[in-house]
Amino acid sequence: MPTKPDAPRLPAPPAGGGTMLDVRDLEVHYDLRGSSLGRLVGAGSGVVRAVDGVTFQLHKGEVLGLVGESGSGKTTLGRALLGLVRPTGGEIHYRDRELGRLSERQLRPMRRQLQMVFQDPGAALNPSMDIETAVGHPLQIHRLAASRSERRAKVVEALERVGLAPVERFLDKYPSDLSGGQKQRAVLARAIILGPELLVADEPVSMLDMSVRAKILELMLDLKRDLDLTYVYITHDLATAKFFCDRVAIMYLGRIVEIGAVEEIFADPKHPYTKALLRAVPEPDPSQSIPRDLPRGEIPDAAAPPLGCAFHPRCPVAFEKCGWETRDLRALLEQHWLGLDEETYTAERAAIGNLDSLEIAAHRARLTPGRGRGQADLTALVERVRANDPEEPLWRGVARVEADEGTLAVDFHPGEDPSLRRTGNVDVACHLY
Image (cartoon, rainbow, N blue to C red; front, side):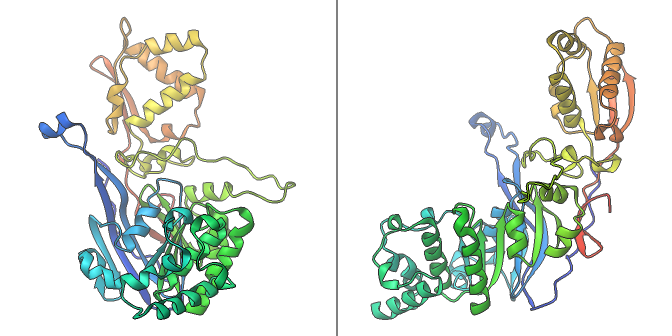
């Protein structure tokens, strides 16, 4: 089993306003139901660790970006901050209140201060409501407008702030009558009409044309300045994060692996995953040649995360402490066989028996010989795989290879799960630091 990490420490706060949100050890786990038969016999169903021990502070007036691939947990984290998803562990302190312990009835009045801007403006607006009704609907829900004329006046003010002018052209329009950029402006108007202080923006420009993305981000910055807003900006795009954010938190498999000021992250990224994301940012100058050595494979299953550091199966610089395991060995064997011709593959595959045992996460892999083969055939196979790619990072994690009662045992060094630690001017969760 991997060594339990130290308790996470709080990333250093930026200069500026006081703490608005204080998030500590936040977890959002979802139970997997499994099959009907499994539930009848009481079999374990497993857990998806969508958010798995996140700690950070959000300060008034800043823009914090949550950046990562699809499946990294950034949207779930954003929803949890507003009480739209219930945490299964940890704490979210907003001002002097702990949001995770509040009932829905207690949360409702607080939602005047905490609003969300969703990714798809078309889905966020009710197609049967005209823009006046849709933007003014929060006023009805929170009973903040005594009359229709007062509600209309507030809607007109909100639409003007987001640039939908002249307002008379838009009040009686329906979402289907608006362009993508206009719909997102209407969504922003609805979000600010209650006078919030925090907006969680979930990929607010990813579904818009390239020609209007910068305009929407500039509008959001204008609203921040004029209305004294604080943002949590969720994105997979580091280019827009560099333009829009003060700090960025890089997320991977439900964890923050690096957090710091935008300038620091872009100038001197620490975590190998952050470096990979930055290498994926398009370079507009065609004369510039940038290496695209992106991480291999895909983001792992959050229901069965890797042992040790979650990024180690994709990391080019992983070593002993990172947590190599049985599943990594199976992936390596299968990748090796993909490069062989059919005859060589058939001969090598026959040397080893069933690989299903390698799907159980452990630091000892036990290889059984195929029918009519022996332990010596397994040893020769492993030696060939290693000779084929001696620089493969997995070999750094192998402690020993030895015969064991007719099988071949491959032992890996025990892994440790790295916690966020201060390195220079950022906090990073990586054994390299």
